[in-house]
Length: 65
Image (cartoon, rainbow, N blue to C red; front, side):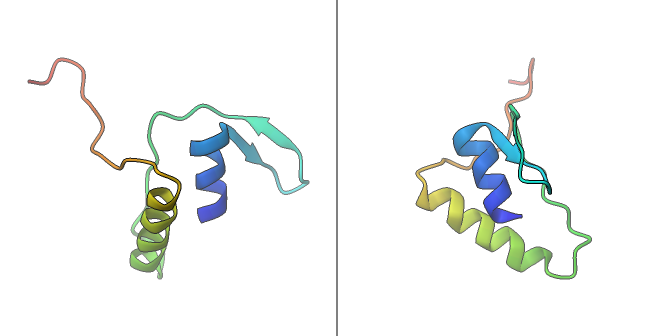
């Protein structure tokens, strides 16, 4: 899942189970907390994003001050 998220962010693509690559443009990534390893997953995703130079920040909400 971390590799898939990094692919979406860095290359704008996702790989299906069959191995096919598909273009995917995402403005945000959502991390669900209902996984038993949600904390570990979030930490690994955070480390992976930072390692590729991606800045993590809250989404900008249109019309917000």
